[in-house]
Image 1: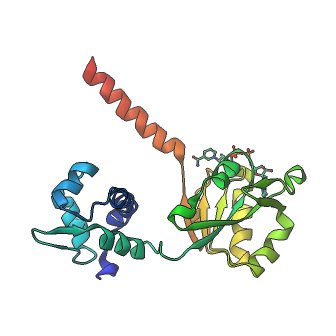
Image 2 (image 1 turned 90 degrees about the vertical axis):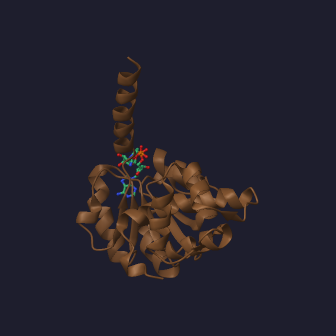
Amino acid sequence: MKLDKVPEVVIQRLPRYYRYLGELLEEKTNRISSMELSRRMGLTSSQIRQDFCSFGEFGLQGYGYNVKYLREEIGKILDLDRMKRMIVVGAGNLGQALANYQFDKVGFELIGIFDINPRLNGFAIRNIKVMMMDALESFVQENQVDIAVLTIPEEAALDVGMYLEKTGIQAIWNFTPVDLNTMLHICVKNVHLDENLMTLAYEYKNLLKKQA
Ligand SMILES: NC(=O)c1ccc[n+]([C@@H]2O[C@H](COP(=O)([O-])OP(=O)(O)OC[C@H]3O[C@@H](n4cnc5c(N)ncnc54)[C@H](O)[C@@H]3O)[C@@H](O)[C@H]2O)c1
């Protein structure tokens, strides 16, 4: 597999391929042509062939792709075949919503929830009790924590981000508005739902223009 050369844009598309291939498996579809996959996904078939070519040879000309094998290989590239252990830091509106969602299905297990608000101490979400921040460091020492989901107020983001880095956590799924990736030396994925919403506004404007 020519993994070193996989372009970033292709990596960004892999979760989407993974999801579609999962749906195909649920429908008991074992093989699919790039043409059919492109129709479903709204990509061109040459784009799909090019993407898959960049990380190896997955299909035979004329036979299409083996859905199960392709999904497994994409899962390996994304490292989804190894369960990753997550904690949520900040058990407010967003933290609770994320903690309630079962990311287990795609390989992420929630093992701890932390906050500074004593009123949340012991409050359970999916049988996991919220712990106070002063318990975080020893929790990380005793449990293998791969990812911290950061859902705290903007003002606390940098300090807590640096603290998490110090405890040895090496990946943060950051929902705060602070782009921590530029400030920390670990893996950080910033999520800005509002930016996605703004691009929807742009597309919506264009649709309305076309209809006028
Ligand atoms: N990325 C997005 O698209 C998106 C969408 C909504 C909200 N947000 C952001 O997510 C964050 C959380 O939003 P919310 O609505 O859940 O807020 P919230 O006020 O409901 O929850 C924040 C929680 O963090 C806790 N907290 C505060 N300081 C802390 C610290 N130092 N350590 C640990 N816990 C601490 C609070 O006690 C509270 O429970 C905010 O930064 C908000 O801007 C991002």
